[in-house]
Image 1 (cartoon, helix red, strand yellow):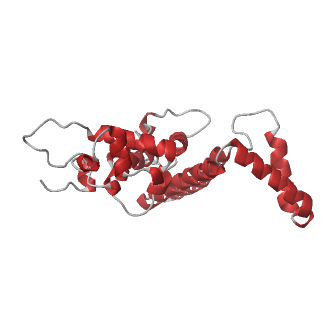
Image 2 (image 1 turned 90 degrees about the horizontal axis):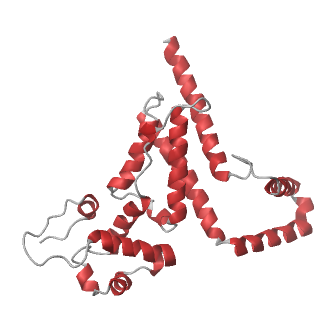
Image 3 (image 1 turned 135 degrees about the vertical axis):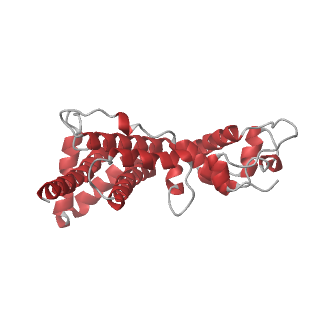
Length: 252
């Protein structure tokens, strides 16, 4: 039987053996175990040999299900991204237009997936086949933008902007490595400002204001909410463009 391609594995279209013993493993189970390893130890510590040992099988036996790590990581990414939010079900509310609510939900949800599976960030780059879940994320965002009057290219570029913001912020937060490294950086930054702050007054003022805001009582959409701040600015810009298109269409 020919080796299944990445696309066949992602979409479940690979040829099935018509006879033979019942498989001892399932592709979904293999992928789930691989995700567990990557979540706990990172993608660099995942190998076919390590995965086989964890499953209690030989490495050669895994090749009956997935040809190699390239195909395995493609399956892992699609599974880790999960089901996208149903932006078509988002209800209109008095404070926000429906397209904005849909895109906000989309961006917040994909950010949560990147935070849960940091290794997935490095896999979402370059030209590669998409699986049903990942393609579903594109479909979900496009549905939210369906009645905005934006062109196809503009709708796709909107997805790139929001996804890039979510990916970048998640990557930055993961790079901090937890509370202790963040505390160490804060102490180092304070030391830098004490030694050379006079030469960088704008930097010193901005961080002093941020520090004061961080000590204030939390509020919805507060000044330190980098995720929603970025989402809002992208949506604000889209709103201006959509209004301009709507006005021009009304004049024509």
